[in-house]
Image 1 (cartoon, rainbow, N blue to C red):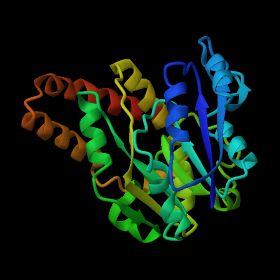
Image 2: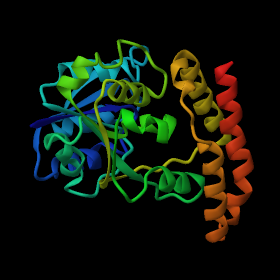
Image 3: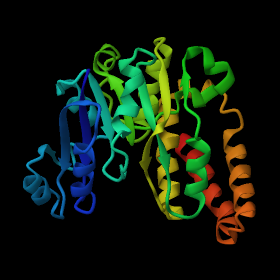
Image 4: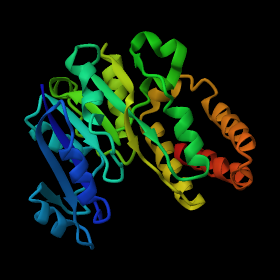
Amino acid sequence: MNISIICPLYNAEKYAENLDKSLKMQKKVNLESINYILTESIDDTEVILKKLKAKYTQVSKKEFSHSLTREKAAMESKGDIIVFITQDVIIRDEFWLHNLTKNIIGGECEAAFSRQICESKGIEKYIRARNYPKESRIVSKKDINRLGLMTFFFSDASSAIRKDIFEELNGYDNKKLIISEDMYLAYKIIMNDYRIKYCADSIVIHSHKFTLKQLYRRYYDTGVFFKENSYLQKYNANGSGLALTKYVFKQSIKSRDYKTLLNIVPNFAARFIGMQMGKI
């Protein structure tokens, strides 16, 4: 099975060259194409893409949508497997793509996503470690009672899906989703009796440092997403928010990371308040 990679870009001059190099170094895969979608930028991303002789299309800021932009590119792609990535992932392993797609090719699952490791210090590092463990797993509809909402945990920072399944499910249903388009798609995959694999051996570095304002905005948008897709709210989150807070607290104590300890209350408060306000 051959693979089409889709990567939206925006003001990505500090990422583009190394990202393109890391994609082209992948081994044991049939790479059909690397397709960049460039949202109009104010930096030299386009200059770099031309230098690399990369395949790209352009969209205006007004046209860009996390769901619609990916959907259009996916429907137009020619690969048997569609791989979505984001511009800020760092790929160091030449078998990242093989490990992400091998179980789809082998028929064990229809979609998959990578392990994400955060190299910056602080709360995000601990959250990544909790959400992206060292053990792989495959989930299906039968896991809903056990995992609740986490059954639909999926990230298009680095993910893959068979194109025929993406087409069968009608992608994102031509909806303009402001966030969580990956969970929207994962729900459809699972509820249509398909399987998603979390591939712990397919590793990307994905680090963020959010201000409290950015966190509030991000979780406000997530709250809006859950309000607009209210069917997801019936699935028990299994106390995941509280469990995550406790995990970060314990890891901070264990690491004597006192700066992170002091940030736990305002950080998780911004997330919680943002989510609740978005749902109103």
